[in-house]
Image 1 (cartoon, helix red, strand yellow):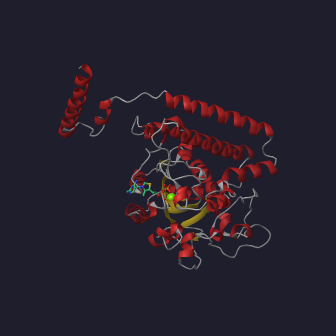
Image 2: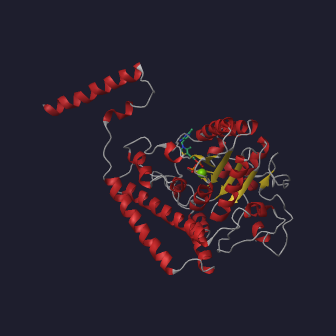
Image 3: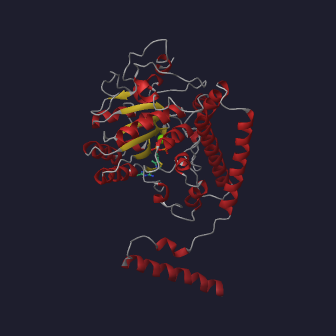
Amino acid sequence: MTESTAARKPRRSAGSKAAGTTGGKAGTTGAKRTTRKTSTTAAKGSETELVQLLTPEGERIEPAADSAYAEYARYVADITPDELRGLYRDMVLTRRFDAEATALQRQGELGLWASLLGQEAAQIGSGRATREDDYVFPTYREHGVAWCRGVDPTNLLGMFRGVNNGGWDPNGNNFHLYTIVIGSQALHATGYAMGVAKDGADSGVIAYFGDGASSQGDVSEAFNFAAVYNAPVVFFCQNNQWAISESNEKQTRVPLYQRAQGFGFPGVRVDGNDVLASLAVTRWALDRARRGEGPALIEAYTYRMGAHTTSDDPSRYRHDDERAAWEAKDPILRLRRFLESAHHADEGFFAELEAESEALGKRVREVVRAMPDPDRFAIFENVYADGHALVDEERAQFAAYQASFAEVEGV
Ligand SMILES: Cc1ncc(C[n+]2csc(CCOP(=O)(O)OP(=O)(O)O)c2C)c(N)n1
Ligand SMILES: [Mg+2]
């Protein structure tokens, strides 16, 4: 039985007040911390630490009022059936879009794709916790968060087709461009958040990164800057267990959320396959950031069910039974079970959503295939705001190179 199920009323009021939470000076729930073994086993993580509000069987957990989870649960206490169906729809459509993109890569329409399969709840829950004026700094896998921010999914595909360098205006949706340089966006987000604070605005900032990125110096530097300057930034680490072929054991000797403690802010581990818990914990973290209480680290404990990218073959480094175990905790299935058992959704809803998924898939295929090739010289644009002699020289060299082909063609 998980700690979170134990926290359910009325069986016992969880004594582990700070289970899954490390203390930070400003954290209300993080005032105490549990004493835990720091071992390789601890690094791998135990489910007893998870904040969970929906079990894999689709059972809603009502935490006891005196448990640490109550602090988070109140952020979703009033969630309506309509909102729950909305979360389900977001996850289903995101998964469908993702599957289309994988298929398009296999058909040669995209050069590469990084699938989010299995991480829908972590992304939709956290993404839906953001406010319009908040700013999001993603990695390259945050397709569900992009969806929540209102970025048209087809815009995510241009870079993976190699026809543009991003495909959307970051300021249009307060959703930064995808970032491939692992962990660097944690620093960008922290700098941005420091600016937000200096402006006296009450917006929050959220930086996404992976378990592998947690080993990067950039992420530690961002943690420290954010703590020292009390920046309104939430660090959202999707621990999907793997950094390409490197497992968690190669990244850390302690559960990742506990890293926050050393920097002086709260860290919490949430069940990343539980959309309700992900929503609640992220709302909590953004709320305290906006109130001026500084950064927080959320470790969303989840699993990358697919390959790292379409260029990867996970059968070379992990066993199939690992994936099978996580399929049983599927984020979409568990919310469906809850919606059905609570009579919040009927057959008509699911049928309509299936039709919507089909339509989305068709639109994605059509738009991608019709994407025009870029102007060859566009690569030299936007390098410097006011141009640069070196870029001019390189453009001229490239033009000469192109012209040499034209001569050959003309022969
Ligand atoms: C600075 C840097 N080093 C190495 C790489 C190559 N690389 C691309 S993805 C990746 C693994 C990232 O793993 P994780 O942070 O767990 O994110 P995930 O892909 O699992 O979502 C690496 C090492 C890179 N893109 N940037
Ligand atoms: Mg990872």
